[in-house]
Amino acid sequence: MSAAAYDVVVIGGGPAGYPAAIRAAQNKLTVVCVDQWQNFDGSYAFGGTCLNAGCIPSKALLESSELFHRARHEFATHGIQIGEVKLDLAGMQKRRASIVKTMTGGILALFKSAGVVGLQGHGRVLKGNHVEITAPDGSKTVVVAKDVILASGSTPVRLKSVPHDGKFIVDSWNALEFDTVPARLGVIGAGVIGLELGSVWRRLGSEVTVLEATDQFLSVADQTIAKEAQRHFKKQGLDIRLGATVLNASVDGTAVNVAFRDAKGEHTAQFDKLVVAVGRRPFTDGLFAEDTGVKLDARGFIEVDAHCRTGVPHLWAVGDVVRGPMLAHKGKEEGIMVADLIAGLFGEVNYKVIPSVIYTAPEIAWVGLTEEQVKAGGRPYKVGTFPFAASGRARAMEAAQGMAKIISAVDDDEILGIHVIGPMAGELIGEAVLALEYSASTEDLQRTIHAHPTLSEAIHEAALAVDKRAIDSINR
Ligand SMILES: Cc1cc2nc3c(=O)[nH]c(=O)nc-3n(C[C@H](O)[C@H](O)[C@H](O)COP(=O)(O)OP(=O)(O)OC[C@H]3O[C@@H](n4cnc5c(N)ncnc54)[C@H](O)[C@@H]3O)c2cc1C
Image 1 (cartoon, rainbow, N blue to C red):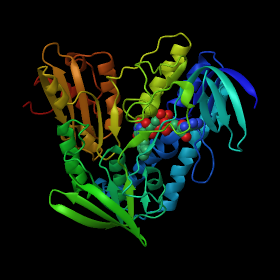
Image 2: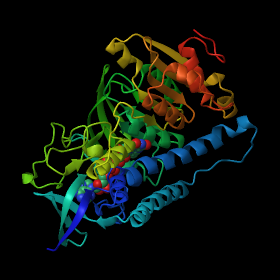
Image 3: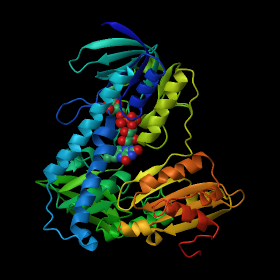
Image 4: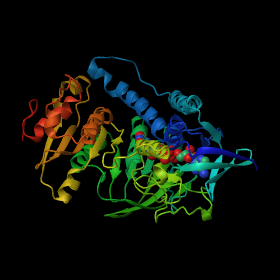
């Protein structure tokens, strides 16, 4: 064993860990970031779940499958006649893999330029902020760090009664790398990941059945938006069964048999592939020695305070492995905050203003409180909505579906929540995030000029509609 000393060691090079490492280096600290991610082909890569098996590959396939769908079903409406549109799934997957490779390789370039030492291997915290690093060849090194940041992320939840085999019963990562379009695809879980994956394969030709145990569709979202989304997904042919609890599943030859129960009783269904998308759990396997003093909560998250301190001096934890929404941008901000705090600078994450996006078509995005949350809080509120059917730009894009919705306080006009379902909702929400970050009033948005014709006018008009002063739609 040899020893080296660094100011900061970051364990995990996903969207929480790698920005922490880069910011620490920008703060003139010496930094090593160790990551153990290994792809199906055995190669190692930085970027964690997000870049290798989550945000980026899923968005690559969502984009390609949406274009395929549009070429088949929408081009004629634009007056574009093309021949038979054929799917080249191998080509589509090659593009997905190449984007992932470019993005993950980019992290190495960023590390090099910032002066971060990137190491492949397993990191384990020992008492006194020593970190044992086991390289892929099994050799061990101990690094001494002034501060250690744990950013080990999360992993898919597996169901005992639905045994994962990686071939027929799969997780979200496997489902991004299918080399054929399953004729019948079952998805357990109508959350963000289940809906995005279901959308990809539905557009590419699968018959998709989504089995969701809860009775309410997208309970995390504003229910006006959720209802609108459910209507669109149904029209797209996604068969979403609410209140459907999966009892068990087993592989029989090349098919998966699933037993589930709903309000009408017990049923069976057969699929060619079954994706389990019931959530993710924090990943801490082999992350720290028992005597380090790191505490896990009842759900396995590393316990931290609002500034991501674990309670053990100079030991921090960020990203999916700690409480809060499991989102790449939340982890990134926590990583940056911690790297700044370590350097003695100001650091803060505004947990009240974290945007959520579902990259289906139409997209769904929101920030702040839902109408249900505002109602439960008891503060008098007002609501304005604007339908994309009244947006010239959305019409021109042949994407005039959905709406923007703004919820504001009656007493001081503060904007409490902004919700969008419609074209490019994930991009539109940026303005909403800024508005909430700056504690904007509805009037602030009303008096802000929005270019015409743009989708962003929907946010402007929704703000006007809050006070029944919309121009381009009927005020109700
Ligand atoms: C299909 C899918 C789609 C998603 N889409 C989005 C999206 O559109 N937008 C969004 O915001 N979020 C999305 N997410 C969630 C997002 O991927 C996570 O929130 C994000 O990756 C969490 O970042 P992290 O750095 O905390 O953890 P991770 O990305 O999981 O990275 C942790 C890294 O640490 C490594 N590691 C773990 N333990 C050790 C150890 N002991 N030693 C060394 N290395 C270790 C892991 O191998 C991994 O590389 C998606 C997730 C999935 C599965």
